[in-house]
Amino acid sequence: MPRKITVATRTLPAFRIDKVLGALLMMSVMVMVFWSQGVAARSLPDFTGLVEENSGAVVNISTTTEPKGGNTGFGGMPFDERQLEQMPEFFQHFFRGPQSPFGGSPGGAQPRRSMGSGFIVSSDGYVLTNNHVVEGADEIVVRLNDRRELPAKLVGTDPRSDMAVLKIEDGGDLPVVKVGKSRDLKVGEWVFAIGSPFGFDYTVTAGIVSALGRSLPSENYVPFIQTDVAINPGNSGGPLFNMDGEVVGINSQIYTRSGGFMGVSFAIPIDDAMNVFRQIRDKGMVSRGWLGVLIQEVNRDLAESFGLKRPRGALIAEVMEGSPAEQAGLQSGDIVLEYDGDEVQFSSDLPPMVGRTAVGETARLTVLRGGEEMTLEVEIGQLPDEGQAQSQAPSGNDGGSSSAPLGMTIEPLPAELADSLGVPGGVVVTDIGRGPAFEAGIRPKDVITEINRREVRSVSDFREVVSSLPEGRAVSVRIVRQGRALYLVMKP
Image 1: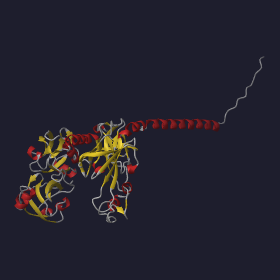
Image 2 (image 1 turned 30 degrees about the horizontal axis):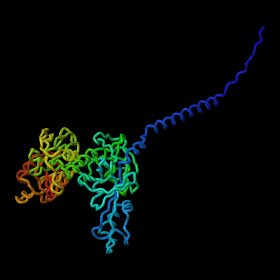
Image 3 (image 1 turned 30 degrees about the vertical axis):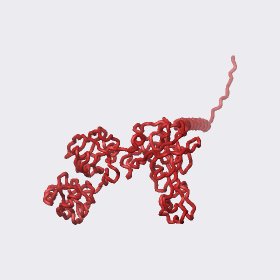
Image 4 (image 1 turned 60 degrees about the vertical axis):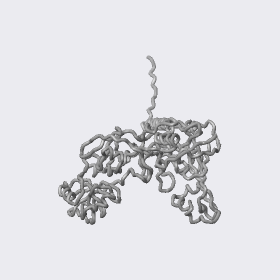
């Protein structure tokens, strides 16, 4: 009979199997983590090639301004502009200029020097930068990436957009940037800047587009690009590039409480900048379209009082006499909803739209009047010089007007005051107490010309309109305060 062979087997303890499986699982997780990190790293943008291609057309701009009197130094020793720019803004103003308390020693005045950035847009030497970089300069020197320093002359400036155009003479065939289209930018896409922050030449910083079409209080005609690209003093006038190596903006301003970068910076869209450049180059000046209205934001209460489902558009508070708007039939109380087919979401959207329109062209406006939409055609005029016309009224979040039951005392508007204000009539607020009018923001000396879209020319008009006001519903009130028209909202 065949022999039986017994083979001994050994079973691994359960706890050892668990250890093996746990180790394998841990190794798998680590592999996945490292793999995902590698994929993420590969997906981040690489700026090296773009920087090499474009640095040659970016320039450093230094200016010298001869003192007009006084001294900008301390104890006869001038402050360097780079040192000043790193100080808080208060100290910059304190130590600069002829009013500096440390200036004043005879013969001790020193030239003021400042620095900024720019970029070449044509091979024959045209350079774009900010107006505030070269404003008041007696001498301008442009330094290229190859360390050449070339004198430049100021061709022209446009303070409204904070732009300046320079011309390098005898520079030969110069490198130029590629100009892109800022209108194609999307929020969230990568952009980068090349400039000279604090005098550190050819510094590269990167980030994303944070927002588009930003309106700043001092700039009505520039729909700024907001980014989180680090911009500091010395970056002003430098280019903002997209990932195709095209210039899409001019770095111009920062929001700061410390004097340095805080995560919010603003650039002039290159579409607007090139329009300004071509006008300065060809005509030596910049012409902008003009409508001739004072506008304000439409808030929730105003939207309700005008019959809008949501706040949108630009509310016309006043139409200037003899303006294109008056000739086209626009009226105070109209809300501009569209301009040449483009929707007007905020009142700040309208000035850049009008400003970009060529003088003499006809624009089609969709306005809300009396709860109905209508279309008007306006032949755009030329924007007057600064100081001759305003384009934006204060934004009003207050509202209202009323007679005695509303806590307000009124009197007839004197004819001479009506003439000086340019209104056909109205009533003057002489006293105000607690009530809807006070809560709405009505104050003594305000002139009321309209309530709930009904004209008020006399005390009797005022009483008639007030007696028919709906209770508990927001109504609009048009006032003239210190010569400026403004719509407010009141809830009787």
